[in-house]
Image: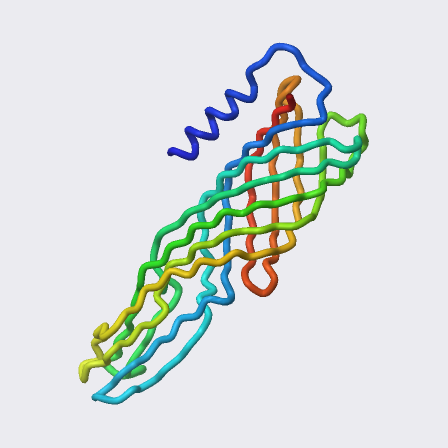
Amino acid sequence: MKWLTLASFLTFLFTTGTNAQDSPWSVQTSLGYQQFEIFNDYRTEILRFEGNDYGRSTGNVTYPIRSLQLGLGISYSIHPKWTASLQANYTGWKGEYGTDRSMTFNVGAENEVTHSPRSPRALRLAQFNGIGYYRLNGIGAKSQWQIGTGLSGAFRRHRYETLARYNITPTYDLEVLESRIETVDKWIVGIPLSARVLIPATERLQLGAQLDFTFFASEAFHRSLVLVASHSF
């Protein structure tokens, strides 16, 4: 609700005004949906049965995090076909890891048992994009269809379970012996691919949508689809 209130306030603020102006500058607000996948953060899981280590595995925590995304940006029209844009996006999420997996013991027997151990997980992501857009449709058209690319930098704070040690009892119950929760902070750099459409609503205001894909150099993959309000000044 806080994000919706802020977006509504900014849209109202940007749409106030009386006379249209031919200005190359515009300010953009956005609100929508994002998905973030991390490839270089790892979790180790150890199973213990009847006093001995039964199994040990280490894998990256790749299950995607999905949440709302809020964005602000400023654009400058270099040429009727070319626009330079600086954009900042933020998302935050808190939930559980392990909702997509389960462990089954004594498979096929009457006392078959399935467990779905879960642990806390959280993400804070601030992303900054510099994008050059090219206009696909004619200059005389009211709407603008644009594609672009550039450079992206982001700061991510990922809090998750890096080590889990479980004990399997003789009745195949699962006991948590150790759970290590850590916070990993990283600056990452990537290449964004962006497409957006802007349709005039008033003399100053354009409304539309934007689709982004960002590849963070073997580190992560980010995608988002947001609604956009762009106001010239």
